[in-house]
Image: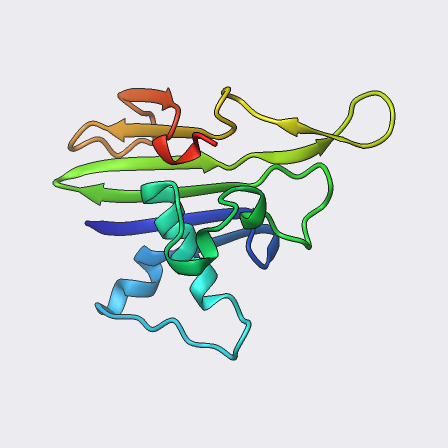
Amino acid sequence: MRLHRLDITAFGPFGGFQTVDFDELSSAGLFLLHGPTGAGKTSVLDAVCYALYGSVPGVRQSGQGLGLRSDHAEVGTRTEVRLELTVAGRRLELTRQPPWARPKKRGAGSTPATRHRAGCASTTRAQAPGRTSAAPTRRSARRSPSCSA
């Protein structure tokens, strides 16, 4: 498995949109996640785990979904993790959106925003071998088993 790109929106400590380009980082063959305490190193790994498995490891997994949303995000920003990777020669794009409370369209307060009954969305896009364009050959949206709350 090779990671190519990670896009994080309103996830963990990242209130806005952040991109990690693993292809650029690994151009020398090896890279290191380094930074002071609280810089977001573990959150980057959590985002990769969430994109792959629909959950984060360890004690951080309690409340899977609402607990993953950044406290620093704008009220109307949807929490999303998108990971591009290659597995067994197939390039994939995985997108997960945990449940979140969006502002009501009318009136005050918030309401649960979900795409599926279970409360989160998972999308996989596969690219045909040898294709250089970003156009997917297959797209499937499904409920993640870990989202059944």
